[in-house]
Image (cartoon, rainbow, N blue to C red; front, side, top):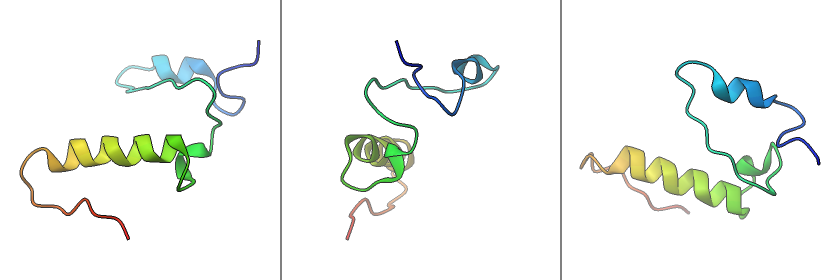
Amino acid sequence: MAPLDAIVPIEQSRLTGARTELHEGVSHFDWIHPGSEAFTNVVKGAQKKCCSNGSGVSTKTR
């Protein structure tokens, strides 16, 4: 079985204060590639965290 991430060891997710989400079948850099499922999940998570407080920040992408 391949490690979850070949670059960052799983032990880092267990550090005090770490907030971690594990996604199977996603490579380390997928989250920075627009159009990937991982990127979409990051954008949705950021929008939820940033814009759920009524800050008025636009969530539209170009």
